[in-house]
Length: 206
Image (cartoon, rainbow, N blue to C red; front, top):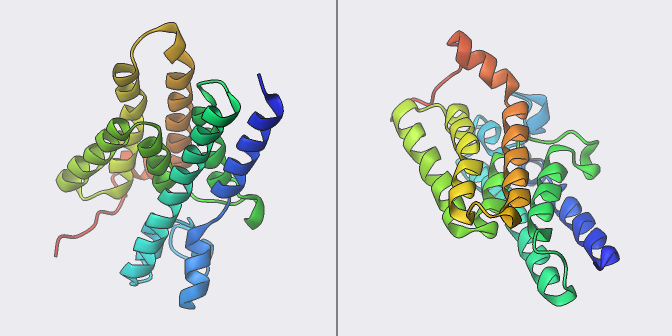
């Protein structure tokens, strides 16, 4: 196995994930650092609380694209350098960890929903599409963004299990999807507590 190429690919994926678009967009718009207000989370939902929908949209798109690009890079490296078939899944995890613990911003990152979406879409368009559809359906019913993300994250490895098949070669990819899911749930621990206590806020219909 070309270990050097695999390590370089994973490092590149982590560095790509470490780019926090919420912080960069906030600086470009002259907005407060997203880590200093609201939930303190540098993500699209907290950016929306500033009242600048375009800033929130750019954050969402940027965080999703970096995850998508990291996996595409790993897929290219897998084909070019003969990396193991699971390298793109490891790169997806590396990019996601980069978002959670960005080296460029003191290892204090976001909750990773948009980046998770990006890596899922790149890994398998069907998998990402089902995750998006799940988020949309739950949000349409509840109007609670965090709950929508939690349900989508929980079901992602389930979708992966059925889409990728149940052969021995799919155990590691599905396992990595499960780790991604658990990390999303862990980063939403405060939201889970609020949901259980009935304190989580919902977006009002307009």
